[in-house]
Image (tube, rainbow, N blue to C red; front, top):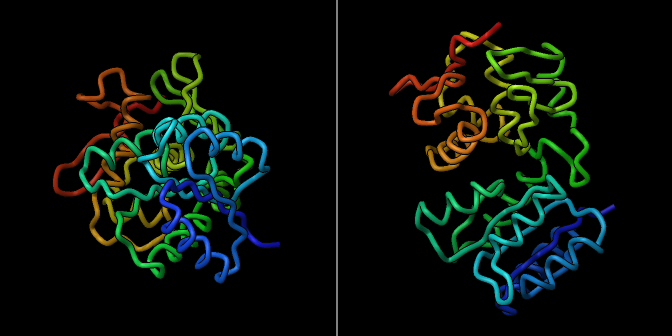
Length: 242
């Protein structure tokens, strides 16, 4: 059964070019040309394996569409945009996007990123944990930190008894640290473990996900206690195990 892709792009020429190429690669592709149509199609179209999303859309912005998708699904989202600033990347990734590709891009690169995003997704489009998470699950079930409880089997986090909603990648990053307390991880090791892909030195993806994770679990993200930074080396779990 072919993997299903939802392509959300308002430029019809770009949309047709991408759709045609992905269809030749064996994907089933459905298209939407504005934010309102995208949201309607996403909710009535069944489970998708990946969403390709342009940020600049009529009627409803790509960022709004992304937030709507993330309220209901952990399907991998790959942002396509002509905007190349760190602000735009942080905006997309901070709302839960899994990857970012800047226009213009080659079809070969896009197809490679689509394949990688689907392969490395921590969850399927319907939100069921994939087998990628199994190695982490085997190490422990529930880990108690100071004020934080991490349930590796059920992919849940509680802070002072209240649920903390993490994206799949944020949970995998946290799971990496709590499963190996005392170990220092470089950015390359984090990327290889969580994204299951080679690291080419693009720190933006790691930085954005780490910042968003800290905003959700730390009392003071500017002075993190759960995940410590070792400047010039990487990150490690702080002295917070109970």
